[in-house]
Amino acid sequence: MTNIPNQQLEQDGSTSMKTKAIQTPYDYYLLMQQLEEHGKDVYGPTFHIEDIDRPVVIKLLAYFLRDQPVATAEGIDLHKGILLTGKIGCGKTSLINLMRSLSTESYRPHMVSCRGISFEFGKIGYDVISRYSCNAFFPYTSVPRIHCFDDLGLEQTVNYWGNNCNVMGEILLSRYDLLISHKMLTHVTTNLNSQELEDTYGNRLRSRMKAMFNLIPFNPATTDKRR
Image (cartoon, rainbow, N blue to C red; front, side):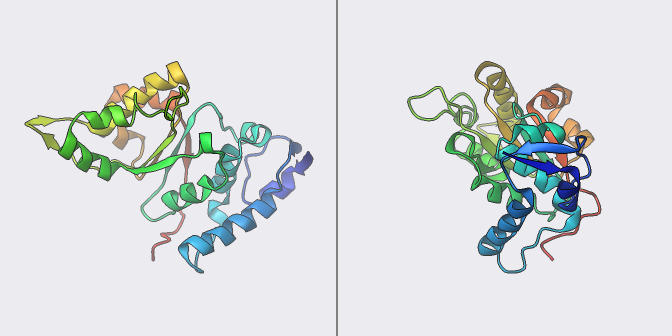
């Protein structure tokens, strides 16, 4: 167990620490370097964690490492999922993918494209909602699977036998109920802001999102990593 001073974490881009020293078994400075190296292996030599994005990365590291002291200092509730927001190309999906390698199996999120789910609904119908909600458990156990729904809001409204369904809205509402009953965690990446989420999925879901998610926004000034 080590004490990580405020100043060291602030060098990694976090300015939200409230305590002078936080006990943690992890060296966040080293973790940031290792994460960047892993990113280069996965996404190519140009991968780089920019200073402006480091506050987001520290929050994600604390969450996926289940590092309670740092998570608490960063305002992260480990009993909720992650709602990672930011403009197109800021690196939301890449970071969640990299964080998967830090997670234990039971907390390792399964990445699912919201656009892909809408196509699944067009093929097989309402069973898709069950697949990602009430049937989303490890086989022969009551341990829920954690899903990360990627690019929420980019999916198309698909017609199935004459019926239109807001598939992702129904999945998230079901997973909210399962959070209450089975502690099922859910992660989401999206380009939408809170008003756009409400316009797309309704006030009923938006109000539940506060209970489901830690909101982690990228700085609006972050760069497009795809250029």
